Length: 567
Image (cartoon, rainbow, N blue to C red; front, side):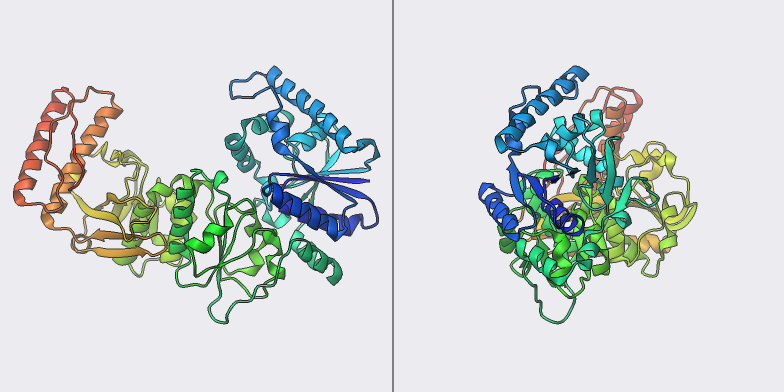
């Protein structure tokens, strides 16, 4: 008897293909975790798998029961003994479960597991029972840090156990590792790794087996109108995102599609645990596919090619490279910096407007999030900035974010400071820089009251000695509309008085940040409320306030500001 242990639709697909190719005539038991769908959904999945007749038996393992009955809770401060007790209790729980299910592991001739850090998979590992490991998703065998970080956030016990026993296929009891070789990190090698590209293996199967599997997952043919090729959006379950709220989930999806899918027909493939019904409401123009089949079956239900495939975390994108012209993997770092999205869009638009003929080798970057910047450059400039951009000595323009001026050795026609942390640290070693800066206001407003976005006022700061560039910066204006997200961003087009006023105000905020970094006592002089319309008298008043703040700083009396909201 052959045993398969998994917890996702991808695992079920891989196991089914493996069973048909390697153990067609042997008995096989599939144990699958109940965390894929709701209870009713799992019941339906079980019936569908059983009806296909690939496995002699299908057993659903209730993950929650195993997790919540374990009395040994593991935290970052837990000692080794606590982890060992957790593992021992899991062994007792699994043995009781096996007895109830009348599953006799002594009858198993081959063990296969894609989830060796929880329940039955963990049992095989802790009992040192040799097994073949299937990577959890395309390319994840070489990205163990991605999995570990996910488990650390989602369920710390899984993370601690995985580290303690070298789970995720890393333990010596693993006899073979099935993985999509092409999807691994470049240069990765594992002598136990065997290529398992499930799409190509599926293609090699006879038509009858293909039809059986497609029918098992209810993956129906997709027909789209002729014309422009579509964009495919592979979603991520909200609980796997950096901010686990539906409001953020909806806004993130809307912004991504506004940025990278405008003007294209849209196809959405929801994650199996995602709330697929919401997408039809949010994006009524999109074709929303059922979530009941793994994305790796998409090439077999749609004969066309995608213009782009976009995802915030689906590993299926690495298996679908051959079916699209462009792939956008917007992973964890993209999300971590997502609050700064408007500043990054504005910075790229600034480059496009100011230097329409610029090339990839003419742009330098310092302290920018490349996971955010690269896809935006590809979208709006038509190229990604070169890999050497962070060390370039000479360039036409430098985009700088989380960096101090002390770390800015380079020659450029102009430098654009994003200042997304609002700490003004770029000025720490050049206080006089504010006299040379050009201020570009960024104003983000709601187009619709129902938008999940927030209205924002921020800015870019541009330094240049080139008078022609300075003149164009002063008159710069652009607008970007986020139709799906219900937001609009305006940049530039300020009066000279307002630009001067905001530069002075920014210098005061920098002084405040300096005091906080130096842990000095802070005293807040009152300043006038920020107004949309700024007069020469307002500028003069702000200069006087700056003078007061500088004198206090010089006397080390503490300094700071107190502002009200913009009127």
